[in-house]
Image 1 (tube, rainbow over the protein chains, first blue to last red):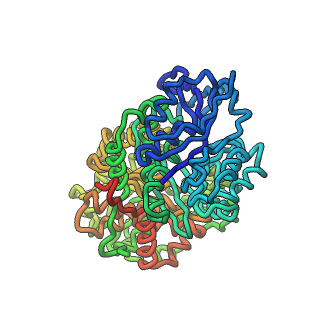
Image 2 (tube, rainbow over the protein chains, first blue to last red; image 1 turned 180 degrees about the vertical axis):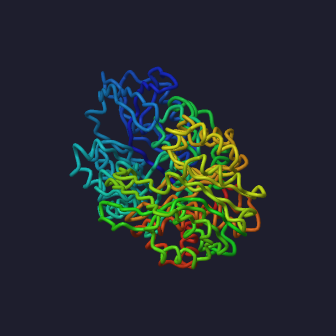
Image 3 (cartoon, each protein chain N blue to C red; image 1 turned 30 degrees about the vertical axis):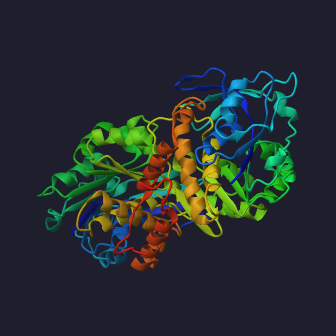
Length: 310
Length: 310
């Protein structure tokens, strides 16, 4: 099943307590499609880069079954560039440089061959750009998922609410869920978000896993206890990509397939943080991910027998 | 199987964003034995109260199958009194008053009929008082578990290390685990703690559940997503009590029974926070706990079939 993603393709420079990266390739669109490619080889990416973006990287993306005809390269444009520094706890970071460049005037165009894609992933972008993609679809996708961030809640809340109305699944982190709903309890926050539009909500909690809310049911997914997080950049996008890749490879969208998709996303994200940028994701195979999904199963599995049994 | 607990029996006065309690009965020993009483009616409590402590409360404790002959009542003594105020996020609190009173000179005496108890729970107390209880056991218990807190790490670290050497299981929260080991990763922190003595470690993460480390294996337990936490006081002790009560009712101490014990503790703790003090725990039945254990199972259960299967 086709999976269409809109999201940035960018240059990042990252500083962590473990070291400093060069100017490397990043961006939500890059991580999402790369993560999804383990499960789905029928993808399209809508994005924009500058003329400074290496052609061989675009070719590498293409070689993973990702249609890149929706990636615009405006003449004379420069690629979006982000510089960030992670604090010692790896849970917070400072943005040192944001050069929007071509992303500042990005007007997404969905290639005709993806206008009927049944799965659509809206990576973190301004909510009006996200909605422009939805508006170009000829047929309402079976599932539209979106990511967003606190920045858009601060400067474009009304636009964000409009986009929330047209999506099925919001993937968001715990702090953002609290900011969006002014609720501390994540259960109450998820309920409030569902009143805004999405039928399903996934709240990412970093090292604490994720919560899936769907049709009155809740699933609590574990995270792999890691000894070391080398670089958290792209973890959230890898999670969303693994999730959407897995889901679009399944026969139906149900609570059951969503649960497994969350586990698939968690597995891919757990690899992403092991090295700088996309490096680790480029090394691993589908089998590595399957193994880690089994580890997540083992980690959280228990049976109640006798007292306490269902 | 006998379960012996040493822990405070106290008066608390609690302020939360939802209201203020009167001066009510609290203390680690109270919560632990009350929580354990759902699974084990053969308990002993070693503690101390003042002459101001109501006899009918001691009788109520006794009526739940808890031997209170180890509770000292020094002449003219006053009961330990704690006043705390929770912040809006319910995750942090200020201690407004601590009157140690009889707890300041507490010299625990294990009743002869509990000197061979196979299960021993050391509630949060100064580490030398905890060790005094261990030293009075005639036979090495099958399992000694302990709680502690950052306060003892600050003022009695050397004593704490001595106590850690003689216990099997440390139950601690995430912040405390990080403070004790100077490790941010909870996996690494647990490994460091195991080098200090305990064969098993349980790290409580509040609303994010708990991690059990035992013999190279890890179990990630979910927490019930709650809409409201009314009063967190006693949640950690209820967790430990439910856990030890369950474990002491099982045929063996193994990774499998420890996993279920963590779920039992989580279930009891999820009730504890619903009302002030011990109120909610006094209302519920063993069936209510069984139901909540099933809810925790449902919340975290998933099966991998086909791709990703073990």
